[in-house]
Amino acid sequence: MIGLLLSIFIFNLIAFTTNKRLTVNQILHIWCFTTAFQMASDVSLEFKYYGYWYFTKKIEWSSYLAHTVLIPPVNIMFLNWFPFGKKRVKQILYILFWTLGCLLYELLTLLPEPYGYFHYGWWNIWHSAIEDPILLVILLVFYKLICNIEKKNKSKWK
Image (tube, rainbow, N blue to C red; front, side, top):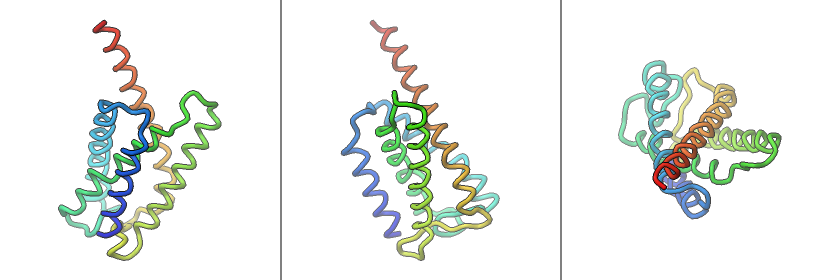
């Protein structure tokens, strides 16, 4: 639990003190999207198929922290620092860098408690290595959708 609480504190602190790009509206959208998307996928992978789980295989209040306040600030940091307007190669390298960072963090979460809180069933790091860049691209597409909707709404109300 110490590792989870420390991570939540650090990730949120960094996300909210370094944000220079995202509006409050975009942060709210990203937070809700991230939480809903993670909960939807975890219902199957975690609770039905036991691919992985937080703390124990049961539904617990402590695992809700991992589902609701751990990943959204990471996504905020990812989007805040994303090299929009740069060459595609730089953007791909950025996604690969973040994938590597996520994989390293995932390995840390596998430490024994009280620092670790994540456990593998049939899931392994290679599944995450494939899934993480796909999830980051989905996040980018969602962010661009939010930005496009905001632009349309601004011009609509002028």
